[in-house]
Length: 239
Figure (cartoon, rainbow, N blue to C red):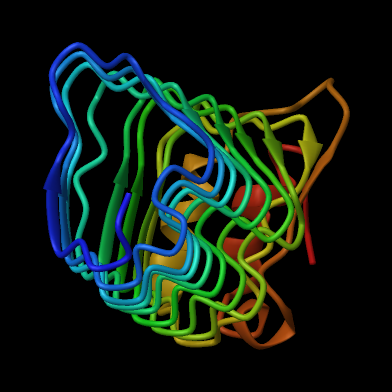
Protein backbone atom coordinates (compact mmCIF):
# COMPACT_ATOMS: atom_id res chain seq x y z
CA UNK A 1 0.00 0.00 0.00
CA UNK A 2 1.13 3.53 -0.73
CA UNK A 3 2.83 5.57 1.94
CA UNK A 4 0.66 8.51 0.81
CA UNK A 5 -2.54 6.73 1.87
CA UNK A 6 -4.67 8.90 4.21
CA UNK A 7 -7.96 6.97 4.50
CA UNK A 8 -8.65 3.34 3.65
CA UNK A 9 -11.46 0.80 3.86
CA UNK A 10 -10.46 -2.83 3.47
CA UNK A 11 -12.18 -4.64 0.58
CA UNK A 12 -14.98 -7.15 1.23
CA UNK A 13 -14.15 -10.82 1.39
CA UNK A 14 -11.09 -10.54 3.62
CA UNK A 15 -10.88 -12.71 6.72
CA UNK A 16 -7.29 -11.93 7.72
CA UNK A 17 -5.09 -8.86 7.49
CA UNK A 18 -1.52 -10.07 7.28
CA UNK A 19 1.41 -9.05 9.48
CA UNK A 20 2.81 -5.55 8.81
CA UNK A 21 0.19 -4.95 6.10
CA UNK A 22 0.26 -1.18 6.57
CA UNK A 23 3.98 -0.84 7.16
CA UNK A 24 5.23 2.63 6.16
CA UNK A 25 1.72 4.06 5.66
CA UNK A 26 2.90 6.96 7.76
CA UNK A 27 0.16 9.37 6.59
CA UNK A 28 -2.75 7.02 7.28
CA UNK A 29 -5.30 8.78 9.50
CA UNK A 30 -8.42 6.63 9.17
CA UNK A 31 -8.90 2.89 8.66
CA UNK A 32 -12.19 1.00 8.42
CA UNK A 33 -11.85 -2.77 8.68
CA UNK A 34 -14.65 -4.44 6.74
CA UNK A 35 -17.05 -7.01 8.20
CA UNK A 36 -15.81 -10.56 7.78
CA UNK A 37 -12.26 -9.86 8.97
CA UNK A 38 -11.50 -12.17 11.90
CA UNK A 39 -7.85 -11.49 12.62
CA UNK A 40 -5.44 -8.58 12.33
CA UNK A 41 -1.78 -9.54 12.20
CA UNK A 42 1.33 -8.61 14.13
CA UNK A 43 2.69 -5.07 13.64
CA UNK A 44 -0.15 -4.30 11.27
CA UNK A 45 -0.52 -0.62 12.23
CA UNK A 46 2.42 -0.21 14.60
CA UNK A 47 3.88 3.26 14.95
CA UNK A 48 1.53 4.91 12.48
CA UNK A 49 1.59 8.17 14.40
CA UNK A 50 -0.95 9.92 12.12
CA UNK A 51 -3.64 7.30 12.78
CA UNK A 52 -6.58 8.83 14.70
CA UNK A 53 -9.61 6.73 13.73
CA UNK A 54 -10.01 2.93 13.62
CA UNK A 55 -13.26 1.07 13.05
CA UNK A 56 -13.12 -2.63 13.87
CA UNK A 57 -15.77 -5.11 12.64
CA UNK A 58 -18.02 -7.20 14.86
CA UNK A 59 -16.57 -10.29 13.13
CA UNK A 60 -13.12 -9.66 14.65
CA UNK A 61 -11.71 -12.42 16.89
CA UNK A 62 -8.04 -11.57 17.41
CA UNK A 63 -5.52 -8.74 17.47
CA UNK A 64 -1.87 -9.66 17.02
CA UNK A 65 1.33 -8.56 18.73
CA UNK A 66 2.17 -4.84 18.40
CA UNK A 67 -0.91 -4.33 16.22
CA UNK A 68 -1.44 -0.70 17.28
CA UNK A 69 1.76 -0.18 19.27
CA UNK A 70 3.03 3.37 19.09
CA UNK A 71 -0.11 4.81 17.47
CA UNK A 72 0.34 7.93 19.56
CA UNK A 73 -2.62 9.89 18.12
CA UNK A 74 -5.22 7.13 18.41
CA UNK A 75 -7.49 8.56 21.12
CA UNK A 76 -10.28 5.97 21.16
CA UNK A 77 -11.04 2.47 19.95
CA UNK A 78 -13.97 0.10 20.41
CA UNK A 79 -12.82 -3.50 20.79
CA UNK A 80 -15.68 -5.75 19.57
CA UNK A 81 -17.26 -8.17 22.02
CA UNK A 82 -16.26 -11.17 19.92
CA UNK A 83 -12.53 -10.56 20.33
CA UNK A 84 -10.88 -13.38 22.30
CA UNK A 85 -7.19 -12.53 21.92
CA UNK A 86 -5.19 -9.31 22.32
CA UNK A 87 -1.50 -9.86 21.60
CA UNK A 88 1.56 -8.74 23.51
CA UNK A 89 2.31 -5.01 23.22
CA UNK A 90 -0.89 -4.61 21.17
CA UNK A 91 -1.62 -1.05 22.36
CA UNK A 92 1.73 -0.28 23.95
CA UNK A 93 2.61 3.44 23.80
CA UNK A 94 -0.83 4.46 22.53
CA UNK A 95 -0.34 7.68 24.45
CA UNK A 96 -3.61 9.37 23.40
CA UNK A 97 -5.97 6.56 24.44
CA UNK A 98 -8.19 7.65 27.34
CA UNK A 99 -10.55 4.71 27.90
CA UNK A 100 -10.54 0.98 27.23
CA UNK A 101 -13.21 -1.68 27.72
CA UNK A 102 -11.72 -5.17 27.43
CA UNK A 103 -14.41 -7.62 26.22
CA UNK A 104 -15.33 -10.51 28.48
CA UNK A 105 -14.25 -13.05 25.84
CA UNK A 106 -10.61 -11.97 26.20
CA UNK A 107 -9.12 -14.53 28.57
CA UNK A 108 -5.59 -13.13 28.77
CA UNK A 109 -4.40 -9.54 29.18
CA UNK A 110 -0.94 -10.16 27.81
CA UNK A 111 2.50 -8.68 28.35
CA UNK A 112 2.47 -4.86 27.89
CA UNK A 113 -0.91 -5.12 26.13
CA UNK A 114 -1.82 -1.60 27.30
CA UNK A 115 1.56 -0.58 28.68
CA UNK A 116 2.76 3.02 28.55
CA UNK A 117 -0.67 4.42 27.65
CA UNK A 118 0.05 7.57 29.57
CA UNK A 119 -3.33 9.27 28.93
CA UNK A 120 -5.45 6.23 29.76
CA UNK A 121 -7.90 7.19 32.52
CA UNK A 122 -10.47 4.38 32.66
CA UNK A 123 -10.19 0.60 32.18
CA UNK A 124 -12.95 -1.97 32.48
CA UNK A 125 -11.78 -5.57 32.36
CA UNK A 126 -14.61 -7.76 31.13
CA UNK A 127 -16.14 -10.48 33.27
CA UNK A 128 -14.50 -13.61 31.87
CA UNK A 129 -10.85 -12.54 31.82
CA UNK A 130 -8.72 -14.89 33.92
CA UNK A 131 -5.10 -13.69 33.57
CA UNK A 132 -3.35 -10.34 33.78
CA UNK A 133 0.27 -10.73 32.71
CA UNK A 134 3.50 -8.81 33.43
CA UNK A 135 3.21 -5.06 32.99
CA UNK A 136 -0.08 -5.26 31.12
CA UNK A 137 -0.80 -1.69 32.30
CA UNK A 138 2.68 -0.48 33.27
CA UNK A 139 3.20 3.29 33.30
CA UNK A 140 -0.46 4.11 32.75
CA UNK A 141 0.24 7.14 34.89
CA UNK A 142 -3.14 8.85 34.31
CA UNK A 143 -5.20 5.75 35.07
CA UNK A 144 -7.80 6.59 37.73
CA UNK A 145 -10.71 4.17 37.31
CA UNK A 146 -10.36 0.39 37.09
CA UNK A 147 -12.75 -2.56 37.31
CA UNK A 148 -11.32 -6.02 38.10
CA UNK A 149 -13.75 -8.96 37.69
CA UNK A 150 -13.85 -11.95 40.01
CA UNK A 151 -13.03 -14.27 37.10
CA UNK A 152 -9.37 -13.21 37.38
CA UNK A 153 -7.33 -16.19 38.57
CA UNK A 154 -3.73 -15.24 37.79
CA UNK A 155 -2.27 -11.78 38.31
CA UNK A 156 1.26 -10.55 37.74
CA UNK A 157 2.46 -8.52 40.75
CA UNK A 158 3.69 -5.85 38.31
CA UNK A 159 0.58 -5.71 36.13
CA UNK A 160 -0.19 -2.17 37.35
CA UNK A 161 3.36 -0.98 37.94
CA UNK A 162 3.62 2.82 38.23
CA UNK A 163 -0.16 3.36 37.97
CA UNK A 164 0.24 5.99 40.65
CA UNK A 165 -3.00 7.92 40.09
CA UNK A 166 -5.46 5.09 40.62
CA UNK A 167 -8.27 6.23 42.90
CA UNK A 168 -11.52 4.51 41.84
CA UNK A 169 -10.79 0.78 41.81
CA UNK A 170 -13.66 -1.70 42.02
CA UNK A 171 -12.96 -5.36 42.68
CA UNK A 172 -15.88 -7.68 42.01
CA UNK A 173 -17.23 -9.64 44.96
CA UNK A 174 -15.79 -13.06 45.76
CA UNK A 175 -12.51 -12.62 43.91
CA UNK A 176 -10.25 -15.61 44.62
CA UNK A 177 -7.13 -15.56 42.43
CA UNK A 178 -4.69 -18.43 43.00
CA UNK A 179 -1.45 -17.30 41.31
CA UNK A 180 0.48 -14.07 41.78
CA UNK A 181 -1.20 -11.22 43.61
CA UNK A 182 -2.88 -7.90 42.92
CA UNK A 183 -0.53 -5.04 43.80
CA UNK A 184 -2.25 -1.67 44.13
CA UNK A 185 0.46 -0.15 46.28
CA UNK A 186 1.71 2.13 43.50
CA UNK A 187 -1.09 4.59 44.29
CA UNK A 188 -1.73 6.16 47.69
CA UNK A 189 -4.87 8.05 46.64
CA UNK A 190 -7.40 5.46 47.82
CA UNK A 191 -9.84 6.25 50.60
CA UNK A 192 -10.27 3.89 53.54
CA UNK A 193 -13.81 3.15 52.34
CA UNK A 194 -12.51 2.08 48.91
CA UNK A 195 -9.94 -0.22 50.49
CA UNK A 196 -12.52 -1.74 52.84
CA UNK A 197 -14.67 -2.42 49.77
CA UNK A 198 -11.82 -4.48 48.34
CA UNK A 199 -11.43 -6.45 51.57
CA UNK A 200 -15.12 -7.24 51.65
CA UNK A 201 -14.88 -8.47 48.05
CA UNK A 202 -12.20 -11.05 48.87
CA UNK A 203 -13.38 -14.66 48.86
CA UNK A 204 -13.23 -16.55 52.15
CA UNK A 205 -10.12 -18.75 51.99
CA UNK A 206 -10.51 -20.27 55.46
CA UNK A 207 -9.02 -23.75 55.37
CA UNK A 208 -7.30 -23.07 52.04
CA UNK A 209 -3.90 -21.70 51.06
CA UNK A 210 -3.58 -18.08 52.13
CA UNK A 211 -3.29 -15.46 49.38
CA UNK A 212 -1.62 -12.04 49.38
CA UNK A 213 -3.19 -8.72 48.54
CA UNK A 214 -0.65 -5.92 48.34
CA UNK A 215 -1.90 -2.41 49.06
CA UNK A 216 1.28 -0.85 50.50
CA UNK A 217 2.13 0.53 53.91
CA UNK A 218 0.61 3.98 53.26
CA UNK A 219 -2.77 2.52 52.33
CA UNK A 220 -2.57 -0.07 55.10
CA UNK A 221 -2.07 2.73 57.64
CA UNK A 222 -5.49 4.16 56.68
CA UNK A 223 -7.23 1.10 58.12
CA UNK A 224 -8.22 0.25 61.66
CA UNK A 225 -7.33 -3.09 63.19
CA UNK A 226 -10.97 -4.12 62.82
CA UNK A 227 -10.92 -3.31 59.11
CA UNK A 228 -7.68 -5.23 58.56
CA UNK A 229 -9.32 -8.20 60.26
CA UNK A 230 -11.89 -8.36 57.44
CA UNK A 231 -9.09 -9.77 55.28
CA UNK A 232 -7.09 -11.72 57.83
CA UNK A 233 -10.22 -13.48 59.13
CA UNK A 234 -10.70 -14.78 55.60
CA UNK A 235 -7.09 -16.04 55.46
CA UNK A 236 -5.72 -13.23 53.31
CA UNK A 237 -2.36 -11.61 53.92
CA UNK A 238 -2.21 -7.84 53.52
CA UNK A 239 1.12 -6.31 52.55
